[in-house]
Length: 165
View 1 (cartoon, rainbow, N blue to C red):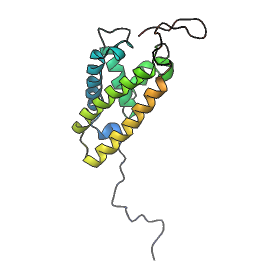
View 2: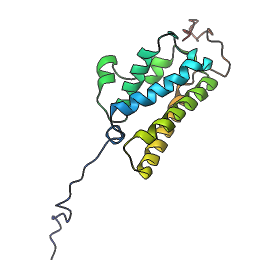
View 3: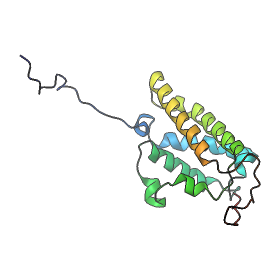
View 4: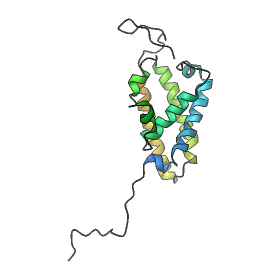
């Protein structure tokens, strides 16, 4: 008779891996975000969102650290900047649906070019790419805070002007 408290898999070790670990760590996110910012630098719709259009490196570093943390990496982003509060951090900038679409297109292209470099079997790579795609589309939709074609200097309810970034 079998003992119900005995695990037949006692010789096996269950090991859970985060997406961060599975894709090869922070270097994956650094490469993907580097590719994304190569798009930003040549896309006037995206570039308009950045206060410093000449030096995108600080924004690039922040996004790479945020994504690494979000997908299971170290808390370096939050340790230096606090809670991500994405909507709050992006609210000063006019983000219309067109900007959201450009952001998603650039990010998905960067992802498509980076995922083959990850040390994943094809099935797992497809799952990771699907999950990341869902996240990026959802996040971009959530960041939209103005109607299409909104004036970057339009007034908020309180009469203050939004910063153009």
